[in-house]
Image (cartoon, rainbow, N blue to C red; front, side, top):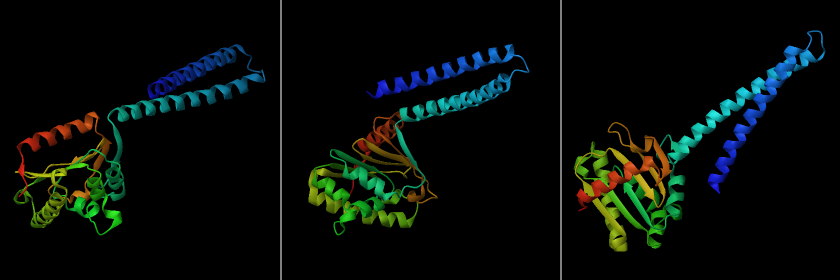
Length: 236
């Protein structure tokens, strides 16, 4: 049905452009064959000018439409200037029914925002685990992090992750890779947030892309996650 709608829109655009071009050509023929003194001549001139402007607008809209289609093919839903849009992350976690993957720096903000049992608005991850959603954390070893604050946050996060694992057993997994972090990923079923990690900028102030799991853009990050996961060691 969606493909049919797209094809219909494409053909409709083409038909409208052809019709406008035909009317412009017809009016031009009439214009050049009419006498200068004819009262119709100024009217035709105005109509031709208006139609040329309309044609230009249609062509610009067509170009914009094609650009949007190319972006849609990449599966990009939204580009976030910052990574701290808690409500959007919460929404996708609340909708998850199969798996959640977290690849990041320390996961401290993720734990604070979604694994706090004392607050109903910050327990989306707890609720997901109660739905039997499988959660995997893939993080750098604390000693591989760039600054002492991140190392402290990582150790605090590890304690919280261990508590979750103790309660939910095989539903929670955590592994460490042994190098500095460069990529961030949060996957909740088919919804995916991906982006870079920079040593000189807090991850919450870093741009990220909200995309679809099946998109070409997300696939590289998911393959990277699987690659690192196989080599990573259990968090301890």
